Image (cartoon, rainbow, N blue to C red; front, side, top):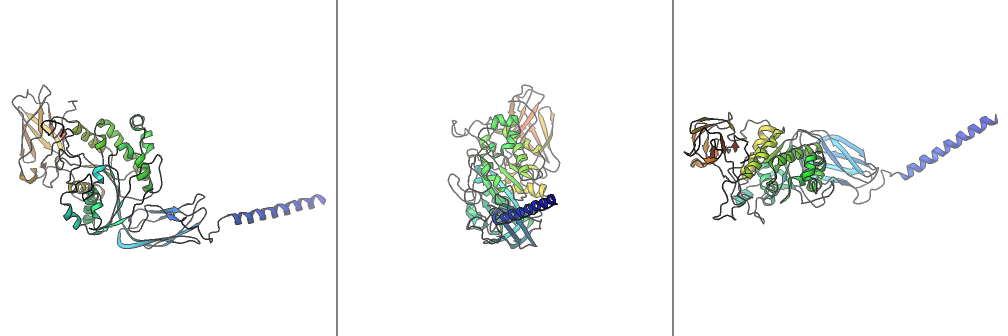
Length: 499
């Protein structure tokens, strides 16, 4: 009996001890009704008034609220209330179900228990595109050193009254490790003549065409930096996962990804536009192709969507030696940029990619040509055709095959790309066609348009039979061959020689 009483006594003591522990635990936990310290509660830095939420995809709302705090979120386009509790580090997140496009201003309210709410207003639901790269993506509509503004920038800015286009331009930020928030202020803005001059020109013309073609809100996030290298933008694991890239680019890479892309990765987006390569133009084309594919795959993985479209801009014609040659103009036979453009084009072996061709809008002595409208609009044509399924032409004449008949060559283009083959403004065809005979030396031919084909006559000195043909395959050929849609012919070569 004494033994039984002792066991009961021990059980009672243990029960009382557990009650004391539970009471202590309740006292040490943060009571969700107690006020949250001022400044502790926040939203993710891209989540702001005037923003655009990506349509047709779940929308993640996240932030920080101190540890173990109850958070309530409401959005005006969904009747549900979304509740969560922040983790031990204070992080919290809720997911709002996908919603269709909505051009009416919406609001987002997030409130910690016992604390002040944060309210975002004038939020739209549409499509969000990230526009990244280096200076040609940075270049705004208006003049700002070292840029001289786009063509007819005064008229373009005055007409930029598009309240359903919103822009977010990130400040430059090179970080050793990935960060999750902006380290410098960056605010969503409603596109208007008052602020359009500071918007990336390529991004603006892209967004404007998408918006006017689809009549949906468009959010443009510009995350670009002058003079940056491709490896600066590739996430570290993408480079580390490829021994070749690790050896070539591993040291000091990924800083701009860490500071300017990683803070965006919780956003649902529609896709990417990319204008970069000037700083990598002396890399081997094969290495740049490899780097570009790794960057694209890496970004898609970080945004948790391996199907995100990625549209890049071809480097425009440019003579790097233009002002150092006598007379000025550069060596017209150099073709390392042509091979680099070939490396850019080879990136298109990856699904969901496209390239805006720019051979007709370059300036031989300027790596930052002012004619940015066709660049942005051609990116938009790629998106409209490939991403949105619209039946619009997005490529100019695209080489298909060639036939030689003694001293002449007939060049055929892929079906549908050379309809209405012509020249810009009806000007004489620029003679950027070269043929090589049995000596493998390329000589300039004489080309004429015949229907949807090009006929090239080789010079008399060419030892026949003709072995290869090239078009616009040098550094700086500003071309004028196009189809009826005004889209330029894509440079090509039929050989794989090293010269």
